[in-house]
Image (cartoon, rainbow, N blue to C red; front, side):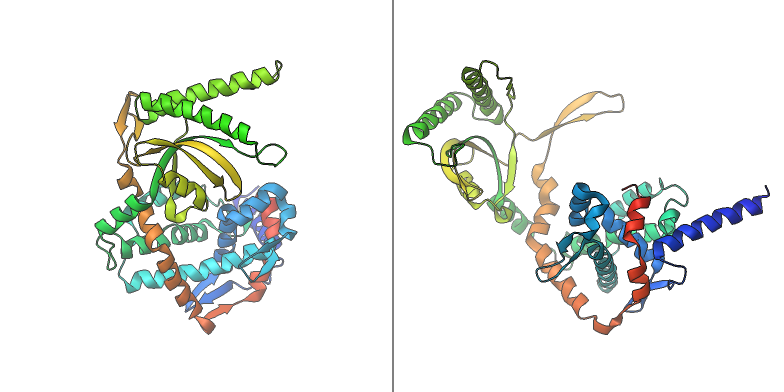
Length: 385
């Protein structure tokens, strides 16, 4: 067969798939215009594909229900409900609009994409196979444009404004204060004070738990007041749990052998479990104490809490080029500075972006035939759902 004939067949197949995705070949070339910027139908499909892969709501529904989830009703915002199918389309459109506003703000403030993030993203994009997305109705260029926009615009602008050297730079002392005031780190041994019948335990049962926790606290205070010291107490706790389980049922196979207590980190200002936060804060840093609180705001709980210095005992194992492992200290505060900044300023930033989006008004032109024709069902089928 002649090469031209093979090429014609391949193009015909691609055209057929694209027509299936778009519900017909008469779909307009352009899907949306935002303040003069044109998003093609291919751009739009790339954004739909992105929502399918990255949006939490879409992911959870598709994970549990598969393609059948598309007919499920979901909340788009506090006032709006729609099918997941329409949610995905709407989310793609709103993401395109947001990217245009972010691009305008980057230009306005003369901020470039973060060089390190850009290089990392471009290196990963080099791994794309040729024509990887043609079966889904868009080409690699449309995907790359979308990936760069969604991967670089937002954070480059945010940290370009509020980060070091930015026009709204947040002082180091303010970042440090937020960290010191809000970052909590702890290890814990906890017991519910509610029985399997959902009734509060008796006073005798509560006292038994308290005595047991006091035993662990005394052992901890007699030893090294570190995470490793608490792990020794925790190992005794797990051994006691295993023994208690076997005493109740000789045939029990429970094997709770964990000897290391998990280290937990929580940011007070962002935490939903306010009672737990208060319980941790009631223990002086570097010490352990027994606290009673409503876990999750509902379940009465008694626990032995070791409150750690958030920056202490942070290490990681790294390998050199020869595979030799070395344990090194981790500067946890330095690692968290960008996250702290987002806790402090992202809501303010997001409000400003949203106000600019709302102000666009009739500068947004939607080509509804293209927007409605995007066949999310067909895309999911081609993606293997």
